[in-house]
Length: 93
Ligand SMILES: [Zn+2]
Ligand SMILES: [Zn+2]
Image: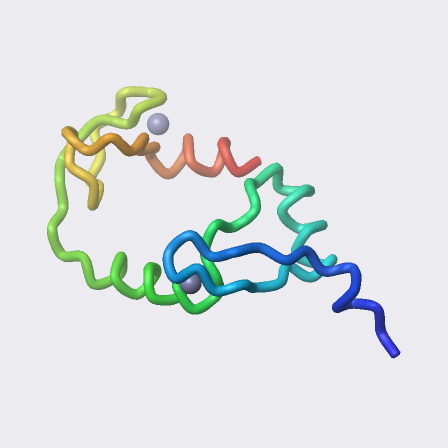
């Protein structure tokens, strides 16, 4: 018997309120990368990724870190911070 289930962290999806588990391997991954734990269940995360990929509206704006001109799916008016590829990778570490 594996104790993967007992050691998994139970989180509630902020979008659909479904409970989902973060297995220890995932917890270690997020910790290592310094990333926050996901707020959405795998289903919602997949849907979100798909909708982002289908997003055809692109905006010219500046990177919030280095001010370099870039293309983003978020407009300059959006409250989201948008980083260019280099800053994004730097941010991910
Ligand atoms: Zn969900
Ligand atoms: Zn940048």
